[in-house]
View 1 (tube, chains in turn orange, blue):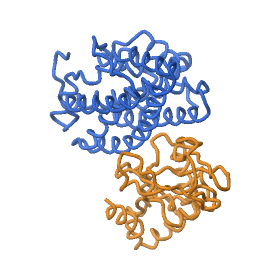
View 2 (cartoon, helix red, strand yellow):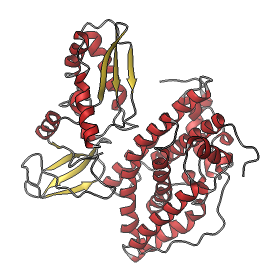
View 3 (tube, each protein chain N blue to C red):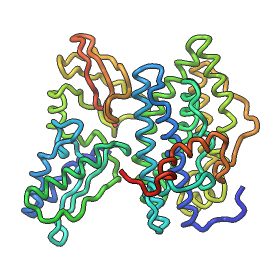
View 4 (cartoon, each protein chain N blue to C red):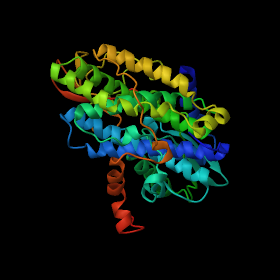
Length: 178
Length: 257
């Protein structure tokens, strides 16, 4: 399973031989997630493929949560950014459900950006976790202490839970491992 | 239960619509509970549950529209069908009641739904399998949270134990319908490698028994089980729920925003 995910991650970039496709990837690197704007859609790992089909650009996007209101906003901003970057036609924006998005696809750069933004990145790997709590330590994004406690399993958006640090006493959000 | 055996394609359509109906009705019930949570954390949890269900309902209805091929949209299925056309389980339409009632309803349903989705991940219809794979991740997270609440209330104070036990006793009669398959379930199992309901029931009972044991709750005796939801025959509360959802489309047909 882990190798499958690593391959998928590299697969993101492997298609970028066509110059237009390569340029589209650089545009996408600046499209922010509307709820966590420090993350780009590439950091989040939701852009699964970009290719050229008969001159039109085709982009595959995997939604995070089924009910996440950001999904439609993200799709619209991807389209707008690509059009603004001079692509005549973004012919095909496909919602690709399978394989389902996992927080394992958040890039290492994305994890660093999350920490800097005050959000703890997901603890552990969804692919390796069993159905029981993995009980992995969660480090405070402010002071890095691992003396942290969950306040609420659910947070302000579907992807986050509320935590607090027992050392620096700051509250913070944890990106759920999913 | 079913007189005629439906054609595979027709059975699949109804199966997907039923999944959408369960998710939509439960999503609406949970939305009704918003601002009534006992504490802020549960308010957040509940809003997240509701959002996941509405999101899942949209995926199922969108797919049902494609299977049907008559141009009906997600909204058409949600807003323009009458009571008899909804084939959700009676369990999901039961009113929220107090917090223990809500936890009991969610726990009983999600213990089943998680297993149903896990089985559907391996069905031969690729689209249904991928929706299930997406949805099951959300439901497992809910179920973990709900299981903790069952334990916390059951193994809590005398009062919380008494009340959650009463909630389960009241709702137990609605827990059998999910496993009483009809022709649609049989055809989906046979033609699309769908869930084996007897296997689901055994796994469900085990999961419920494990959590109840930790919660110091007795598993209620199986008495007469209510049914009919999947034939469009609902409990009284369903009409009110549907009226509230469809009021605007009934008053101003075709209204959009």
